[in-house]
Image 1: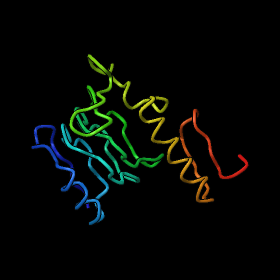
Image 2: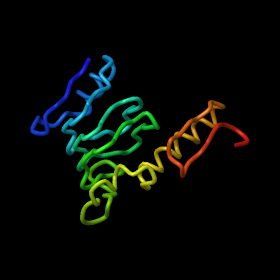
Image 3: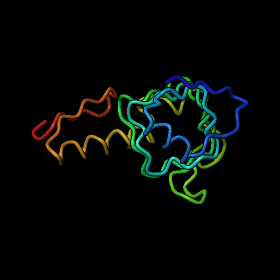
Image 4: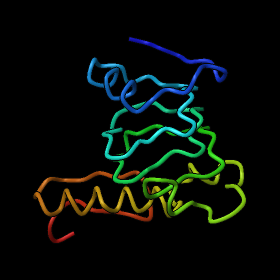
Length: 138
């Protein structure tokens, strides 16, 4: 199922995203997620390329190396609910800064995925050169 949203489309709520994800939709190119709460959502194997993620809440979102964020637009995000822990603290991300694989926010999410994999004795393959985990003893 392909569902490309125009940049002028109304914001996609987390519930709508989650429902469509459960139905098998993984293609959210140019989705307008501005201001949505992605809190606790599984966003593995999803294409959010060129999506607008400005003002989203990323608390406990679940991404990995299969999450595609190429060209995603993002001026700022919140790490906690209720507009708490804004990143960057003031101003905006530089163009492309948010989607860099070594960005601290994405790096933390990938690091947490690696820790979960190691603790559950599952191999973890990450594309980020800053984080590498393949299980215990790596």
